[in-house]
Amino acid sequence: MTKAILYVGHGTRSKKGAEEAKEFLGRVVAKVDAPIQEISFLELTEPYIPEGFERCMAKGATEITVVPIFLLTAGHIKEDIPEALEPLRVKYPEVCVEIAPAFGVQERIVEAISELVRAAVGKVDAADSILLVGRGSSDPTIHEAFAEIKTGLGLRLGVSRIEVCFLAATTPLFAEGIEEISSHARGRVLVVPYLLFAGLLLSEVEREVRIRRRAGQDIWLMEPLSRHGVIQDIVVERASVSGKEEARVATVNH
Image 1 (cartoon, rainbow, N blue to C red):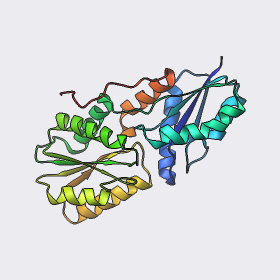
Image 2 (cartoon, one colour):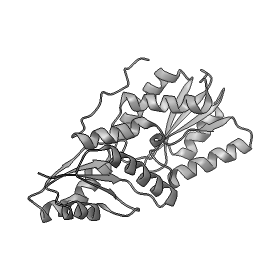
Image 3 (cartoon, one colour):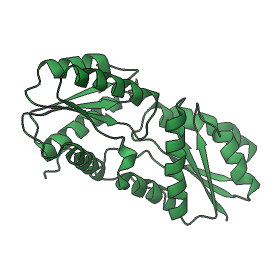
Image 4 (cartoon, one colour):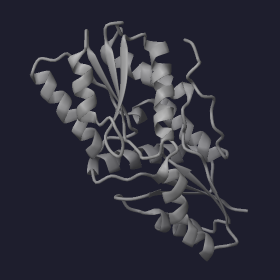
């Protein structure tokens, strides 16, 4: 058996975001001991899944583990990636294809967020507020996941208020979320994008934060999650074994 790893990122129209994702995955590839490794994207950024899969086959793959570079399980993991792979499964019925899980809600990711916040703003005060910004999905489990993340951050950072909003597909949307939390803030507003890489979605957040800072608001924007080493570690694990879900975080007390 010749094992191949096919990494699947979301993809973006942002050249900066695409380059950042490819550089990140290049670092992962260097750390994974697999004879065949290829990078692909679900949409918007080439190469797409079929091209990445065919490259694996051209190099002699008999077993392919698909490693999605997605934070949470939603429509892309449940439907879009399997649909993209189905014609390839039919074309190559002799090849064993497995899909590793999304990262899921992990204690160490919530801890990484806390570390990114402290690195950016120093000591976090109880009067500070956090706005957690997700990509968004129509899948109802996304709200459940963010409720757990919110609880975990509250336990670690001890702020007075944490709110969740989204950039697309579900509510509350970012414009509403940032207005609401800003209108009730007693201290700083710390905006935490639950996104892996830079891109057009993050640009929207950056633009709004800049406008508010110029207007005198004490508001801070954290870096994307891929800037923390734990994210790379998780992807390496997913590629090295058929990654299993980590313990969930809501009840962890730090």
